Length: 501
Ligand SMILES: NC(=O)C1=CN([C@@H]2O[C@H](COP(=O)(O)OP(=O)(O)OC[C@H]3O[C@@H](n4cnc5c(N)ncnc54)[C@H](OP(=O)(O)O)[C@@H]3O)[C@@H](O)[C@H]2O)C=CC1
Ligand SMILES: O=C1O[C@H](COP(=O)(O)O)[C@@H](O)[C@H](O)[C@H]1O
Image (cartoon, rainbow, N blue to C red; front, side):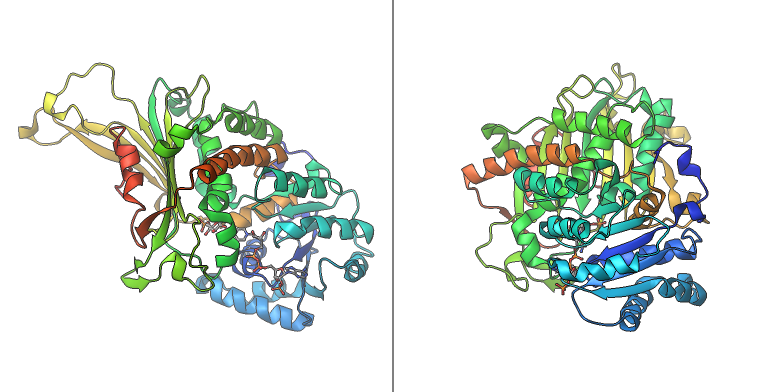
């Protein structure tokens, strides 16, 4: 199916987009917290064709009625009361069926094949389970005769633990599905402002012409989480913040900022440009690793005024763990556009706020004519806020008003807050957009195999360097912005993390 921009404007709730969705891991955390609420919203908005059916698959042997009850309960909990529409909920629940099986055993798959016996529409298989069993599921789906030439598969991150394991997993999926029918999710690509990054960069010559090392001094990407480990200690401790967040979400954001303009909006045109950025990321040598990368782990502190435990005291914790819950780094994209422009990245759990934002710091004017005392006054910044409130602000210098001020400068924002600028349009959750794109068979918001693998290659050399140095993570109190060293890392360059939240 084509990914052209014209297709993206096709009517959405029409028959063309009918699918059967087979959701593996339907009773799990992601499905209940994110996927069912997103699917419900699509249905409520009239974007899910009437004939679309959803089969939940999981291990527990419950019947379809109690599965629907569990989904109804999660909708009640997760959807704003003003968006809980009785009729829409009823219609949505009626689409659901349930099949209990062990995903690693071939025998149960006959039930899925039978469900599809007279189906006229493509099936989308969504693997909301750990990546280690993606291969088993794909093999059994194939061997049981449940697939056809139109079946698409959606896989969650992280794909593997390093380059080698991601190769194995991608090979196993690729043995059954061609790349054109594999949808690798990175839910940050479904966020409203991330979409806007593409619009803003490539629709506005104002930015397009300034987007390089001649005009940009440095770039900051912060993805701060207020939550801790939330009962996922086992998974998280094997991964750490670098694998959990940097390998995927932060590198995808960096790619969208740094990539060259694609020749069109087709999936491969965009992905080709992203891959070039990943290939150009500067590896960390021994010396740079100590100077330009900070690993941290939270200790007890406060969150929203309440005491919270440290990472090593969380439920299920191994008290010797050296896993990082925070990473800050200075990296560079070694190409003509970005040579000499640092990209400062930081992400951590148990920070004071949930805040994801990108700040582009522009260079000062080459010749300065204003009050010498104000010479260091803030330069232009473009602040792209992903969450909590989506918006874009451009900080510009204007004249301070008042008769007694002379030609004094004042930094102030030109601000676009999406909620107040477009009050009638609800900002959809990332998963809504991504599920809709899968239904339409559009891949441009999904990650191609080579992107995942280049991102792993870069992270692997960093992790190898950490192992060789054996430096323990630096401690930071829960509720702070991370280890002091992460602040020193940027201040030693005469800069600071943008903190005008
Ligand atoms: N949760 C999140 O916020 C995020 C999750 N992800 C990714 O999404 C995927 C799902 O994560 P999450 O929902 O948290 O995981 P969970 O462990 O909560 O859910 C997995 C589900 O799959 C079922 N399952 C696992 N193995 C089998 C099996 N062999 N046979 C039958 N059922 C099985 C589980 O059943 P049972 O409980 O009986 O084992 C459970 O219903 C993972 O790849 C994760 O990395 C990505 C981003 C965020
Ligand atoms: O993929 C993941 O993302 C979440 C953060 O997502 P957000 O949309 O809430 O910013 C993170 O908490 C989780 O550890 C990670 O696996």
